[in-house]
Length: 562
Image (tube, rainbow, N blue to C red; front, top):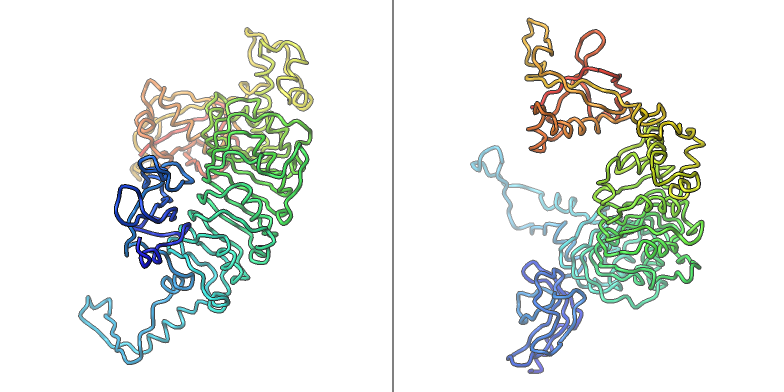
């Protein structure tokens, strides 16, 4: 290796961009069996890689993500980035023309025929390019990698409050802290899709840099949990934290939780939302107990993590912040058992909103009714509000299910298997024992007795196409009715979905074609026959329930699909 050639090699850990892809230099030198110099790189996109840094049995470097490494030759095509201000100027400023250079403007309405000389465009550009007025700045993918001189960023653009630095070439947290220290009003920072060197400094090093930061997004940075704790400790005003898709598998072993004794992280007392979306967390207890260092947390997002069970806590209350948590996101996890929801109610007894869509338990029959009944304070499930009437119906249904179970014969067995049994019996009264027999009709306290049967007709054409000279008679333009049962507390939005779903099983084929082809709700219109015989069109999106619309036993509804 010639000395001059060696002097031009990038340092290990240097970030680079090549043909639209980014990566990190992990090796620079000769490779056995080849001529010349090679760069061993780890690509941010693992699909670009070919190996883990080994060739012919020799390990030249290692990768954070298996299979993301390869060797490339040094070339002029490789970019090692620019400064923050260079990227800012490139995106937000058009270079001023010199005064001696004439400029012309083609009038758009002249189709290129009329061209006039413009005067004073430099002044217009100068006014528009005043970077001091910028509040929200997005520099994602601008290959920022180098620090500007101290004081230069704060002088040119001191009022930035929101900054997106995702997918850049920033190699260290020291550089992030330097940029943040130059922006005293910075509140929102997105650093996703960067790859930082391991954090070595203590939280005290960054405290002044992130004093006003309220939101931090560090998705897909492969940051570790100890590094997260160190960073958050330096952010006393942080409210929102996103750490998704970082391949996090365990938190407990690297947190400050020891033998059920918790210690809050200084500076993290105001954090309210933590988003773990798309990580690899499997153990519920590990995730829940590790969050005890954030005593004010209210929202926890664990979407798309392979969590299978929610084990009951060992102590009550399980954690200091248990009653603070109001929202849990468990979409696309592997939760399967109803006892998991019972355990969730112990962990977070004041839980108000829950997302379980995409989980095995959400595929269970009567999932919504049972989930609502399991969680006392829930006000919304999977984004749909829960009315007081719906809650009552769901709890009565839950009581009827328990009372009909042949596996549970004593009160003790029922209360042990269903923690809300005694509470719900006190609230609604115990189900009539006579109705636990299979040959008896459903009790008036059960959900089934509250169902109403609606008569659904399919219109062959909408009322709007009727002749204005004659009154539209829907019965002469519709198929024979079929019955559809529903709860008066059902929302119109859910009723619309029930219409489409039920259509698949109707022998007459009503709505079947639309349902089979995935017709959207916008293609379905419906009218309710009023007491005077007039038709009133139903608004499926108004958020009200069937009872509000006046739907009752044997109400006549006409539907039309475009």
